[in-house]
Each structure stands twice: as C-alpha cells, then as structure tokens.
Length: 633
View 1 (cartoon, one colour):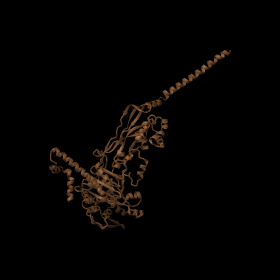
View 2 (cartoon, rainbow, N blue to C red):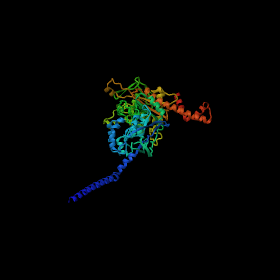
View 3 (cartoon, helix red, strand yellow):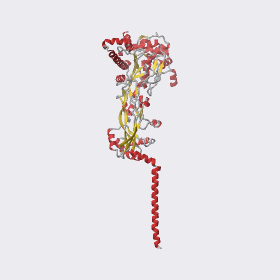
View 4 (cartoon, rainbow, N blue to C red):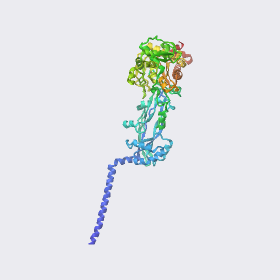
C-alpha cells in the first residue's frame, strides 16, 4: 500500500516540472514573437543605428559678387556639433558630461531637447554651431563613451571686416520657431536663414539643398565604411550692382561719422554703393551671436542696426528746394522771372522767418536762389504754390513713398498735405507750416535713397528708374513724370551753378567733370522743441548733399547724409565729390586701357595717335568735352 504512494510522488513531480518547462518554452516563444514580429521594426532600427549612421551634408550659401565678379560675401569651413537623439536614455545619461566637455550650460541643453521633441528622433539637433579645437579634441577622445555626439562640416558666412557694406549685405541667423513650423521640413533646428539686407531678400536663391552621407560605424561609433552619399547642392551666387571700388571710397569718406551714402546710376537704377554708419560687424552673426553682443547692438543710442540709407527718415533741408524749383516751373503758378529781395529775414502770418544768410542775398531770381540756397526766395514760392500743389509734385517726383529697392524694411518717408494732417492729427493745415516745408523743414522727411532717386530723375528729365542691387535684374520698374525740356535745363543749370558758379558747394568743384548738386542743412529739432529742451542743449543740424555728373543725362548720382554734420557744403559734399571722382577716375582708366588695346591692334604709336583716337571716340569723351566748355563759360 505504501509502495503505491511512493510511486505516485515522482510522477507528480515530473508533471510539475513538465508544466514548468512548457511554461518556459511558451514564454520564450512569446518573447521571440515579440522580438521578431511585434517589435521587429524598433529593433531593426536600433540594430541599423549600431552599424549605419546618417550624417547631414550642409549646403553652403551662395556667394555675393560685385558688378565685376569680385567676392563681397563668402563662406569658410567650420564644424558644428550635433546631438544624436535615437536613444533617449543614453542621451539623458550623457548630457552632464556633454555639457561639461563642450562648455554648454546643462539647462541650455535641456531647453534645446525640449524644443526638439516634436522632431523625428532620428533627426539630430545642433547644440554648438562652431566647434573649437578643444571641442573637436574632446569629441574625438570620447568616441567610445559619448556616442551621442557627432560633428558635421558646415560653411559659415564670411563678411568683409569692420562693417563693410554690412547693411546692404545683411546677415544670417538661426531660423525662427515660426519658420520651422511652416517650412514643411525644409529647415531643421540650428539652420541659418537671411535675417536682413540681401541675405533676407534673396534667401531662397542663396540657400542650397542639404545632402546626406550614410556610413558604417563600429560599436564605439567610429566610421569604418561608407554606404551611399547624396551631395549637397550649393546655393546660387548673386552678382550685385555694387562697385567694390566706389564702395571702398564711400566707406572711407564716411569713416567716424554717423550717416549714409547712396550712389546710383539713374540711367539703369543700379546701386553702385550703399553705406550706413555706424554698422555692426556682420561676422558676429555668422555663428550664434552672444546675448551680450545682441543686447549691446540694440541698446546702442547710435542705432548701428539701422540702415540709414533706406530707413533714416529725416528732414531733407535745402535739397528739397530742387523739388520746389521744379514745381514752380512746371505748375506755371509763378512766372519764371519771379524775383524776391532777401534782406535776411521776412514775415509771414505774423511770424519772422530767417534766411541762413543773415546779411541777406539781395535781389534773387530762381537761378541765384538755388545757387546760393536763399531761404527767403523759397518761402515766397511755397506761399504762392500752397501745400497741396507742393505735395503733388513732390510725390510725383518720388518723395513720401517707397522707391521699390530690393531690400526689406525700406521706409516711405513723408510728404505732408492738408488731407494727411486732417487724417492723422484731426487738425487743419496752417499756412505757416507751408513756409517751413518749402525749405525742407517741418513735417517733411525723406531717406537718402529717395533723394538720390528724385534728384537723378529730375536731371534725367522725369525718368525715375527703380533702384536695385541685383545686377541684370529681369524686372526693373520705371516711372515717368512729364518735365519739360525748359524746366530740366533751368534746374540742372542751377545745380551746376551750386558747384561751379561760386555757389554753396563751390569747394568741391572738380576740374574736367560736370559735378552738379545741392547742399542742405536740416534742423534736428524745431524752435518750439528747442525751447522745451532748454537753451543749454545744443542740437547740431544734419548735413546733406546730393550731387551728380554730368549735368544732363547723369551717369552717377550720390546722396550723402552726415548726421550732426551741421553744414552740407563742408561735411557732406566732399564725400559725394570723392565718390564721383573715383567713378570718373576708374572710367578714365578703363577707357585708356581700351584705347591701348586698339593701339596694339593697329600697331600705332600710342602717344602719336592719342588725339586721333579721342576724336574718333567722341561718345566716350563727350562728357569731358562738354564739361570743359561749361567750365570755360
């Protein structure tokens, strides 16, 4: 009896063991099923990551060239540090070591990770735009234990130093979160885009298409082979209308002063030079700009981030008298023979209005009023024309609205009128305000670019080309405003007299060049504002000069603003003279080189044949010949 019970005990144990074995087999089968079927994609990706790594190839931005093909903005090779986020746990464990090794605050790394949570995990994020030699050494020496780090070669922007052409070229910066959301995957965190100037205007042309490289890596993340590669497509280069030589002259002539210079070819609208001082060094933005530098630039009272060439909205002063002269002649509201006696002061509506020349100019006609910039004459012209007629002609000549230049953030300026004051201030226009506007003061404001285009268009007989910086632009706008030949002749002859007949800019006369123009000095603050500010405060006037050459059908027009320069003749006019002289010096050298080529072709002695060739090439030398005749006259 007891023997039967003893036989049942081993059998029960065997059954239990069998069930245990079957359970273990079932668990193994379930595990294999989970690994091979349910989680197969996940583990395939992890296995692939252990041996295949995708590295982005960043496309360089296109270069910027001047009109002769010289490089103005280029790129230089650099390394950026990427954080691979495939394994979240490994990333979290490695962050303290990464922060310490690369000198990045740990909280900044956590912030970047939080901002990238919406991105695919296989997509790395940029944590350091430019790796230093120490960073590169740290990453290479920790390949085995920091597999979450990778370096990629990028091309950083290289701008000419000391803020050269900084506002026209603009700068780049990291893409904004808003753009990341709306870019449909075109941009990644850490990518750069144009933020201002031409970098922003032509960002879609300059930016390239990134490529990628798939490589084999071993267990410690070291590259052991390559699979395939999709080459990056560099951005397209853009050729500008800027002439590097003229830009250099303009930059140097304005050194140490606050203001702007714009040089245009009014025949085509080409911007030959554009300067705004002070200017930031755009290289600060080529990598992630430090917060303290950004704060300093924004809080600087001299406003270095302001492109004064297209954004400084200031009273044009006596330069506006050219618009007044054109309006007077074209409207025929005042006879051409109109004259005024200037004693240095006159009275309108019970208020005294002074001329800049305290002793007065005596009996003045239109020509002499422009040449010597008589305020009293134009006070009277303004009274007869009225503000609405003045506003009509000024707006038709390009003031109070954008020029359409291919740069972002251009300002409109302001040409006041009765309707404008009623709409904005809900007040009626007072006749005394017209007197101030007639000499470029009061509510009227303009930018240097607007004044360059306006004066150039008047000298062209009413043809106003759209200013542009892209050479060979396909669509260049043109506006025409009918100005009679007689008006053009009288106004341009008066501007010729400003420089060549002992006028306000006689000190910048150039031998052999028909330099014409108009000086201007504009108050920074009016009389009422000066009373409120206190008489101890000294507000220096802004200095203006817009010059061009030759007298008719000009080839170049230069507008110069020197803030707090006081006198246009002494502060602004020499800058324009230097730029125009550089233009003609360069043109003369180019013509001489062309003549030399012809001499060699015909095997003629250059010295003996020079006079003959000049006679045969009248279209080239015509401006100089015409100028000689005018100078003698």
